[in-house]
Image (tube, rainbow, N blue to C red; front, side):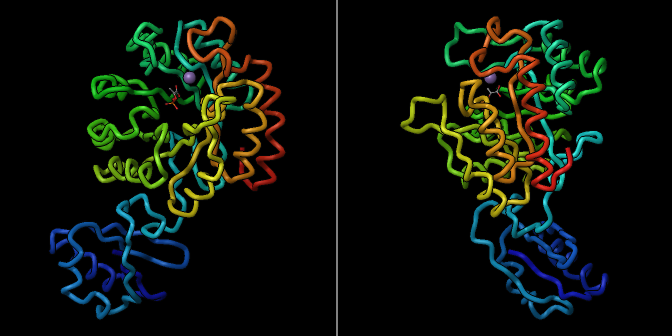
Length: 337
Ligand code: PEP
Ligand code: MN
């Protein structure tokens, strides 16, 4: 339920509504927008309805939220969320590029990727230290050693770093190294992992599940947020369909749908969505045009030698060319890059 305050409400009356909500054992989420100030109420709403909140001074009206996700809901917070990763802003008018290898393979490979990422204007370096592979016999990642390389390369280049965690055990290690925690498609509904990520103070990028609906995805974000961590970034990475020409099918409409339903920033990953490097550029442009807040792109110093996802990875030169091609599209959308 949402309580909307009148235009020129007094702080005392606002405080009184919030106090009433809290005294009933419910949670109040205050959202001060440019034109409207709202209080989102989470908990058993019957308790507050009994108090007739519409009759409180300076309350304009109440709105019932039918969706099961509340904190991730745009009705709860009308202004877009801007996640501030130590100065790098994700969301709002900002455009961000995360680039780097699928997997951290060695210190040198990661450093070369980071230099390429930086040269192409990426602010964030990606690299998997824990890899969720389809086959147990495929390269599984360097784990803590990979995280250590990421931290070293972060210090050398100044790039922020994002890495995927595949378990609670990996999460416990990763929080000591990364700037952003990534929860991958395969774990989108690993509710215990989501809750643990919600207890950390690191921003979390939540990728859409392979066959997840947008409502399931937003409910997964709600799991993280309901534990107190509201710095959630969504990532559309393609969904499973009957089409076999591409690895997944990029659901480009997810971008405007998310913008309509949520205040959270959304990043598009054209690399995993297509699985084919030739399609990364056109899908990146489509993502920008649809209103995405950023891109995640796989870049490898030598894609032919990559231990994972070589066919969809760009080499440093191709990444540089792509990022230059993208700049006019980003400015056309009124975003800063
Ligand atoms: C990744 O980004 O490394 C990854 C495994 O992606 P996804 O979870 O989207 O498959
Ligand atoms: Mn990959």
